[in-house]
Length: 299
Ligand code: GUN
Image (tube, rainbow, N blue to C red; front, side, top):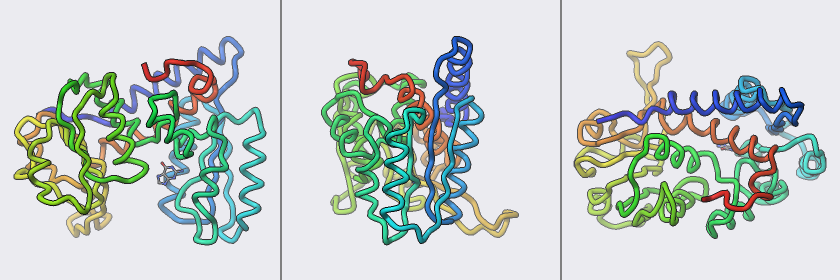
């Protein structure tokens, strides 16, 4: 069994981005600039956004961190986004989710200009991804694809079974794994909460991508020997033996599945760490106007 090491790969990507930014700066080019909006003070969201801003600093990007009160009106948020949409100095914009109840996530997601939508949540980007056109791909599916690519995992003709059909992981990764280029060309089965006899499908998977949101749901009996296992889940489990009182686990029972898998992502230290690398990659592309102005992004 070999670990798919998200820490190592994401560090590699950050260091490549940082080198490219140095070259851009040396020739007097435009330094990539990400704006991140957070509404309210949800602790987990604050941590995520702080980490995104810190990573921008690490690779030499410029960043604008906009913190808005939880009681801000939808109209005020709309104006903030429109002002960033129209600001040529800002290349990428993310609005951290979830938003407070009184603000429509759908409306806000659709307001961000597709060419600045480095989260890849806008319907234009999702639709372009489905059509195989240049698009911003959201952080987790992009991170999984990059991990498979960097570990040179063979995918052509393999049976890829995806668990979970969310808009931001299960659906896009199932489209990407089926597309006609590497990593892709898989036969894809998309399983979800209404799938019957789930084990029959998971046991057939050469590549098993688990984004089901249930702690340690997948055991060794559900996995084929030699499978590549990608675990997207992350859960806090109470653990009195730890100083902080909890440990992190994924959707997969790591120890027992690792002994059967050929490759597996750990939790933590797997897919999660790839997401910021994906966001920064998208922001760099946005600043170079790569996605919307250069054909062949997918090839
Ligand atoms: N909330 C949880 N994950 C994400 C993400 O990738 N982007 C944004 N904008 N919000 C999130």
